[in-house]
Length: 184
Length: 113
Ligand SMILES: [Zn+2]
Image 1 (cartoon, each protein chain N blue to C red):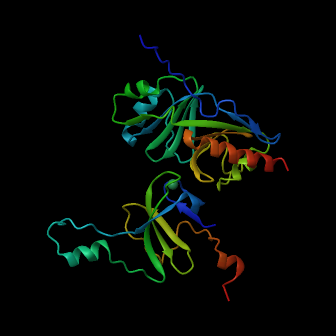
Image 2: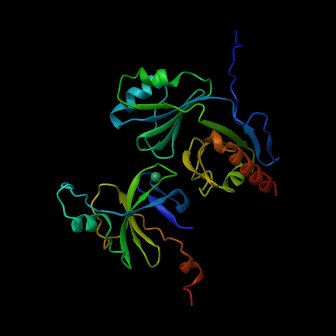
């Protein structure tokens, strides 16, 4: 009899640590995520089904506990559940027309925290991250060096940087450089 | 760095987040199979390439992902206004709603000698 192969999950940035005293870099724990597209008429039913109100204003997010809905575009959201809940099933239970794609394993995230977090991210991202323009709870799809990211400010000195897993070594590396610079 | 006002994100963002999408307001023929080669050439290939104001499609590709239209001066690279896809060509004599001054190399450093 052949040996049975057992698949184990390979976390993209497992074991990585980095940053500086000004900006600490921590790979985020695995989370479930969906890329959600829906028209305005489906927003309220999807919000009820997901248990988090889908934001309709640019650059805003909404959170219920450890579940977050991030506005990406006029009909597009990234929904993240840090407790790995089944978001696909939740969205499907809405009963309204929508598109949901499970991107839990496509994305990974780096948590950037510390007084130099803004500077570290601005080393590769052109957005104005001052608190007045990018307050706590703000989120945006944007660019970091050559990689597309979704930026989510979870506290005054903390950002969640979502990126595609194949770009994560690049993102982590460039963030490390930025974090070093932020220490000076 | 150019700042471009996205009418969907409702704020100015760096040019790095955007991608040009060619001329705007090009009407696709509804009778594609019947038109002559010359008519197809005019629709598909021939563009005015103006020196001055041009109406273009842009996509906020590393942002909200939406296509929108912009009026841009091809000499100064100045964006005169931007507006949502599907909206008619704006009257450029009206004050543009974005209003903000766009930083160009020429404005900051003076015109090339
Ligand atoms: Zn946009």
